[in-house]
Length: 215
Image 1 (spheres, one colour):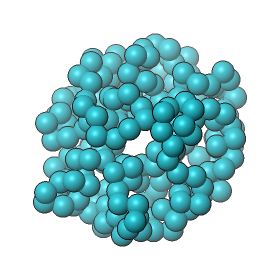
Image 2: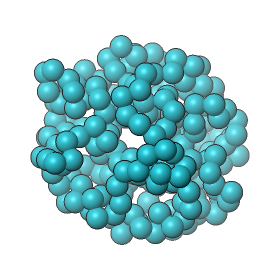
Image 3: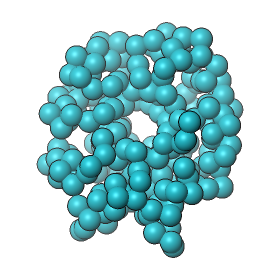
């Protein structure tokens, strides 16, 4: 199966956001990755539902919303009307993950869980049967343009083994420092979807070529 690519609009030109969203859709992306940060869970503040609604209007591909927030349930309610394909939340922040998974599923959205670089995949072993995707952070969440943390390769392999045992339909997504330099290692580790921001939006040959290289 070909690698799926979810460009992160965090690296887009927000002064020309509709143009930059259209460019990645026309360039062959599979999902549009939207990073929502609240300035509390991570030391950065990004976008709310008004901007994401504009992204949804410009996009011809499904949205992949990554919540880096406190009070996940509140943010799920904010973004659910936009009907994203996925909403992922950080296990480190959520006290009642199973309840939140059920809520996301009830809204006809695929629930996903995100793990920070230090969080072992075993932390969510008994939630895997209830989710559709796990997002592994390969940088510390909060800012774009960071360097890839190599240990995520081993972590992805461990997660893949758990998934094959618990829920073979669950996908693995990796976010942070992804480029053509590490994409083969990620594929070999069992990763299904990659999120890339800087590599795609700052590629000298344009976004379509960058997406093609990752695929």
